[in-house]
Image (cartoon, rainbow, N blue to C red; front, side):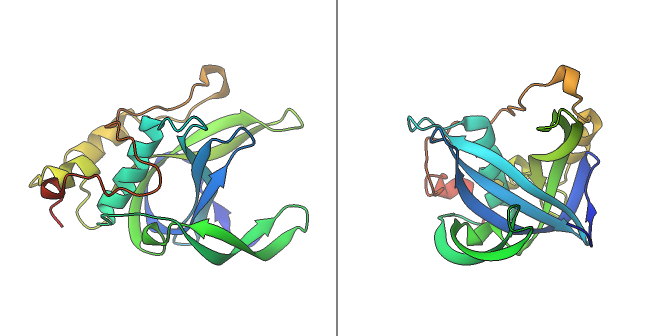
Length: 198
């Protein structure tokens, strides 16, 4: 896909989530696929796998999704059916298709912490993909936990970025950030109401 630049470097980016689509793997694991645009530079196809086919919540990745909802001040995030434009690799073009999307996470200014991660493609070539490892409020630089704690100044974003490194193939392991394990499937209604300052 020509015509735009890809984000390929780990760091903090401000932009909009242009797509947050419900996905499921062949094995029944549920996830959310994100496309992100930061001033014309894009990271696409970033999937956070949030729930196993058994119903067990994958807390680290669910925590990242809940964090994005927090910085966007979304109390509840539920997928709705919509027509979307998505690149079809067989057709080699963007096509219209029906999908379940999380509209509450889309088309609003947001800060995402992205990590570059090497992987082997089908031809055995080393390629780079981006993964979402955190989020922050683009106006205040507050992280989700600072927003919930009603912190007065942002400290954690700088700390997170200080430890953020590209993930090379030889040290390949899944990022599993610590997060509260909230067993919740499609919406986030079980945030403690009094802990949300919005």
